[in-house]
Length: 251
Figure 1 (cartoon, rainbow, N blue to C red):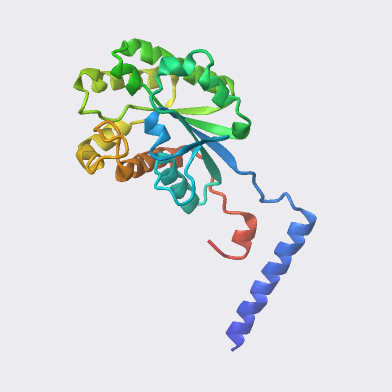
Figure 2 (cartoon, rainbow, N blue to C red):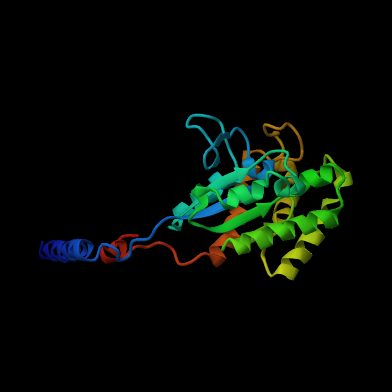
């Protein structure tokens, strides 16, 4: 009984102290949610999403999935105070993104991304579909990196996932260019291809909404989110374990 009273007494003291600090120092330990931008083609857009003011989103009740949902869930579970805005656009090439009306620039300047700190870039598979030169794709990705940094963002660059349906793309060669670009620009590389390729047959069977071997199904998009998280968790600032949570001894 005495132990219980002591625990309650300590808890009440912590709670009162927390309330006092919250009243007189409201800014202590409170952080504004930051934004991570997901930019790319259909591998970013995902399946079943609808266009909204802040990119594309899944309407409640719809059967939608993308890597951002998986990544968002992992970030939230581990107390990272970030929201991901999905700015994927199916069918887009890197040339499209940088051509008039300059979608890449419009995404960077979108008011929804005013508090963005990171941008996740995975694009180029559609360029290869149309037999573009891989070095041109590399150049375009480099422009995106430069524009992101000029905007004050930290870019992460991903290799292109497998596409056994279109071997002529020579994705391994393109990914060599991407790895080289990441080194040249000193950018964080996320090697989606190496992480996903061993199980790509699982990630495309059953097939997704695109009914091809280029796009993963939900389990594949979830795996993509996990790969992004594994890299992001090494570079993001400390987790948002607020002072009040710590004060109350909760986790």
